[in-house]
Structure formats: structure tokens, C-alpha cells
Image 1 (cartoon, rainbow, N blue to C red):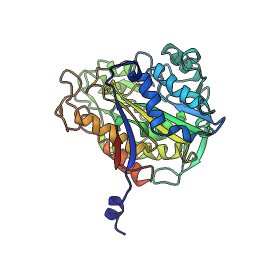
Image 2 (cartoon, one colour):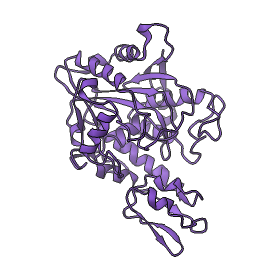
Image 3 (cartoon, rainbow, N blue to C red):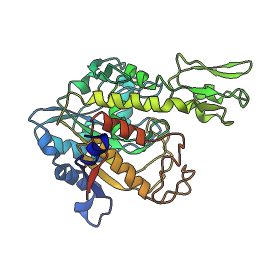
Length: 376
């Protein structure tokens, strides 16, 4: 059977969608979270006393684009009603900030409202105190033979992946797949994913102002006679140095496809041991151009859309992307072009990245299908 015929015969995955229109109490966003959890049939995925990782992003300090903890509480209650034992979790960051270690990470989570009194569940940083509590998972793929997954996520019986859908400078957009890849990896695993892409300095444009040095969280930039120089051995590829007022710092975009492939192979490893025990809910609201790892939240590029859910992360990300692209973009946002309905919004922000690559590779690895049936 030819590859094209195989693709045409793929059964579409079901993606459930609830928009944000509301006219009464039963249509509040909290109620919509509960309803979509049940309509998607997620209750059947959990067994009594399943230790269930609820993977989300607590947001870097200064950022407010993360999922409202009140919505997360609704998910926790739904899981607990099945007899399973949920816990809120994320992993420590590669870059310096307020989520570099478990102590400051939990403090940040509490500051943003992710605490026991709100969630009704514990908050556990899955890769331990310093980000090195990991398990090597065999994947035997093109970039990696093994991947480094946070131990408490790997050892959980089930997982619910809650994602704030938004833009990302390297992957095009940050959806469920990226949440699995970066979010479930230990610090060393994050380094492996980023190791192929590095920013560089155009010495002719550099005015030696030092803005990049101040912005670098890894102290990986030094000022030399000809201008700033990035130390590749310690560079985190976080992109903070691109704050340069002269645009002297740039990415070698030819390396980005390699980064995306590495990311998807990590996503594959994150769920390898949880067949039939993972579900995904994505919030397409506050669709900011940047990841929630930035210590700020830029204005959204499109209107709020709704909540989507599926057991297929590929179909879910594709549906979220399609709904975003159907919108008319905000002209006063960081959307530089592609404002019209049907145009690729994230390419309107980061023209050198292509979010479709992560979907294509994940589909190729058998993580899901880009074909979906949207059930509203």
C-alpha cells in the first residue's frame, strides 16, 4: 500500500470543542471545563488510586498568560471523582529564573494561585530539587536512542496534559506536543533538545551597548574588541539576548528544524509508557506571541476561542492551529502580517518558523493524526 493511500485511509481523531460564549451559570468557563472532560470520555481512562500527573505550566514570574488555576481545580475535581489521585506538576527550567529549582518553582506556583487551597491537590516538581531526578526512556529514534524524562511523570500511572496554546519563537507554536516535550523533560533533557540551535552576533551591527549581556540568564555573553560574543558551550538558546536594540543578535534558522525534531522525539518518550492513560485539554485563550516562560505577557494576537480536548495530541494541536488561523488577527499586536482570516498567524509573528513540522513528525512517529473530527 502506498504512503499516500495509507494517509487517506487514516481514521480522523475526535477533538471536542467548546467556545467561550456564555449566557447563564451552567455555561461558565469552569462548567465548560467539567463538561468537556465528561463529553470527551476522559473519566474512563482512570482507575481507582491511579497516581495522575496533571501536567501544566505555572508561568514564569511576571507572566500572566498561564491557565487560570480555577480551571485547573475543575479538572482536579473531575479526576478525583474517578477515584484517581491527581497532583499538579511541571519540571524545572534550563534557564535562570524563578523556576530553576523546586523551591523557587513551588513558590512561583503558589504566587500564581497554584496551591492546595485552590487546587485541592499537591504541587510536585517532577524532576526533583535541582532538575536531575530523571529516568532514561528508550525511544530508538533518529535523534535520540534514549530521552531523559522527569521521574515523577514517568512513574505516574496516568497523565492529563493541560496546555495554554500560544506562540513560540523556535517551534512556531506551543501546544500539547511541546508541553510534553519540554515540560516532561529533566533539565538535561531540555538541554539535549536545545543543543542544535544557538543565537549568533552580527559584529557589524553590534554597538557594544551590553543589552544582550544584561539579558543573558546564563552569563554566556562576553564583550570583546569587535563586539559581543556568545559562548556556545554554556548558551541555553533561550533567545533572551535577542532584545538587542540594533537587531545584531540573530538565530541561524537552518538549525530550527533539527530542534523541532528533537522536541517531538522527547514528546514521544514522555508518553511511551502510558498507552491509553493520557488525555489532553488545551485552552485557546490569551494567545500570546511568546511562551509562558518569558517574564512578561504580550497582548494576544487573536481573540479568545475556546477549550479543546482529545486523546490525540497531534489532532488537538492541528485543530487549535486551524481555529487560530481562521480568526482575523489583532492589528495592534505583535502580529506583523497575516492578519486575514485563513492566514498563518504564528508565521505572522515568527516568519522563519513552521509549526506544521512538529505535527508532521509526530504523525510520522505514530503519536496521532492530523486528520480530525471537530465535535462542538
